[in-house]
Image 1 (cartoon, rainbow, N blue to C red):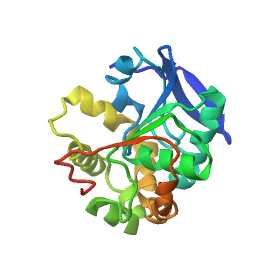
Image 2 (cartoon, one colour; image 1 turned 180 degrees about the vertical axis):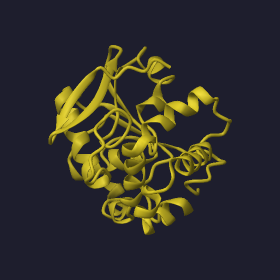
Image 3 (spheres, rainbow, N blue to C red; image 1 turned 90 degrees about the vertical axis):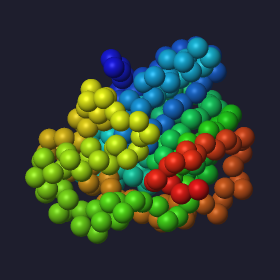
Image 4 (cartoon, rainbow, N blue to C red; image 1 turned 30 degrees about the horizontal axis):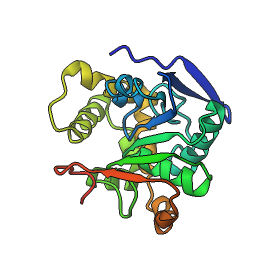
Length: 228
């Protein structure tokens, strides 16, 4: 559970937490929402047997800065392009989950970031997107941001639990909950939900035929968030 992100990268005045382990050709793992790089804590050490693996918390997530402005698609792909350049990771292998899939696709097609390969796990890639909770929060963002703390935590627990097959132990649940608690975390959580917009996938989904590397798509047969 001791997940280390010892490095920091300045992106337009915001602090991005990241780390790297292993030796070999470069690879990057990209987390989904509402998670952080913690979701890779068991997988990265295995990948690091074969690759030099970079991992990071996206802007507004985990241990990175949680600004009040845009933290979704319009910013994340530019951030990722800047990080890849900072790392000097030429044509990395990419493993991207959920919202991270959207970021990887946009950085590739809009920012010209080249990959050796791209693995997409339940990617947010095609419109329409967003669960019933997401749709409600988008329509009433300020209300959700002002919910009593115990109601917010209960909703967040249910939201995270719906994303996993097995029941998380409390110590595991805390890893995902804690960044979104307290006043700052609660506002940040509902802010990034409210910013979800189909326009970001619509901007690139018609260009998927232009992808310049091999692509593998993984999808969970019992996935309730992203339909087949």
